[in-house]
Image (cartoon, rainbow, N blue to C red; front, side, top):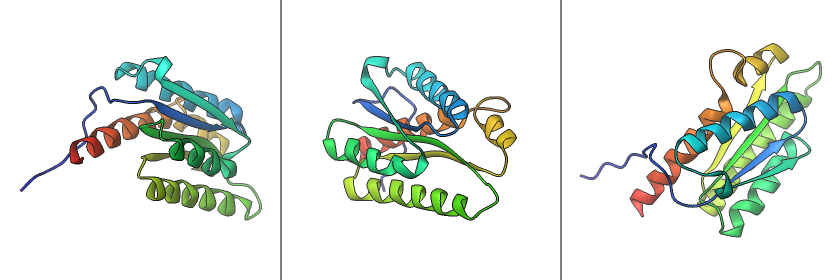
Length: 154
């Protein structure tokens, strides 16, 4: 019986990061955490490309373009959707998640969901590095692990 696990060792290939610039302060912090983690795991900055989308709803289309290009080992999606007084939150968060998942399944490229979905700005700031870690860093680790896992299966 074979058991496959992804490692956090230096992965091969290029990485794309798609960031929504809506809630820019939070998203810039997520991006910084993501880039720091990639670098600390042996992925130099010249193997990382970043694209800024208007918001989280637009991220899946940009991610799909990167994934279909054949140039990237993984695509990391970073954004922030904060619940407001209308159902807009549910539509944006749900469609972003669905689009990211569909892109990964359609292309076979790991497309990582690093979009915060929070009730308050304070919760978003806390998850973007103010307290207890940075979800951008977590998304980078997931991308590294998935690239190494898929590489070990192939």
